[in-house]
Length: 379
View 1 (cartoon, rainbow, N blue to C red):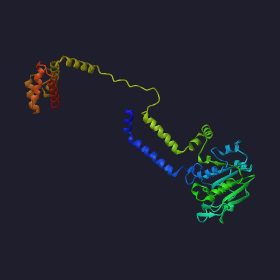
View 2 (view 1 turned 180 degrees about the vertical axis):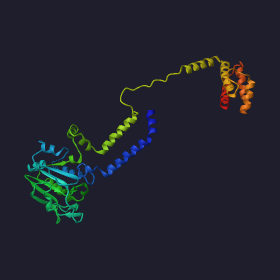
View 3 (view 1 turned 135 degrees about the vertical axis):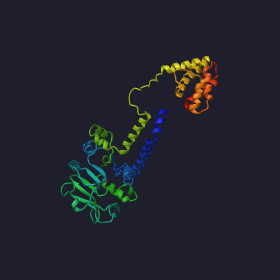
View 4 (view 1 turned 90 degrees about the vertical axis):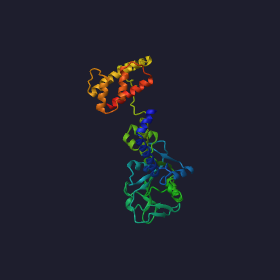
């Protein structure tokens, strides 16, 4: 735990910046929202469809969310014959009904696609259009004209307007075999932001329940996957699965990995290696043992004599008196005064005790050793 504290103190700037980055990203993500959530029945944002979906649930309409691909929907034998599939695009995209979807519609099913690209006209952006349910609020200048009906569909399919004005159609219905394809130029026909405009909700409810079929809300296009779909993605196209994972989940996973590495002090997996204790130098152990014995025997004169002799030879050498044999104390003192110009009282005191045999008290021994150190620093 102490090592972890030291590690955090050393790298606290990086940890702090990481936490700030995660908090800021979380705030931005919460305010801006995932773009794929636009039109999702799970979303309670203004551009979501949570309120409309709940309204249909409260009315007892047979409605459910779908978190698998369209191919799995078309092959699902548990669904009733005749299904209404509601797709709310997160952004405007060109109308394109695949051959598989066309065959599925011809069998008596219905596809409602909200948010199909259409030309923009020089008309007011905000408008209220007449419908059997009342004045429907529309915030777009895009309208389907007569030349837009064949986009992605068979040539000249039978079509009729569900919601229109003098410029063109906002919601158009195409008939294919026994089924219908219904498209709208805006994805916000009954979004949460239009809860105060009840005709919008009632219009989409009437369109979805016109054939009295089971309603399925496509959440697969908004990035939702059920467990079987996730399993298929893992065993099938792994890259597609990764690209479908929200970025915030990736950041949280990376953050957890970093915290685990910090907690484990960046250790690699494997057997814990216990560091060996440092080997003790034999000479150092001998000196410590000898010192303990001399201290126990109170042999201060032995310590003073040997340390004094070693230091005296060193001082003689530095003062130019030679270091082969001991010279008289007076010669050393005289050389000290001539060369250092410093008082020689401490030097004389140290040398006299070193040449004597008097036992010293612990206090006197400490004083003598301190003076030896002081002389070594001055010479």
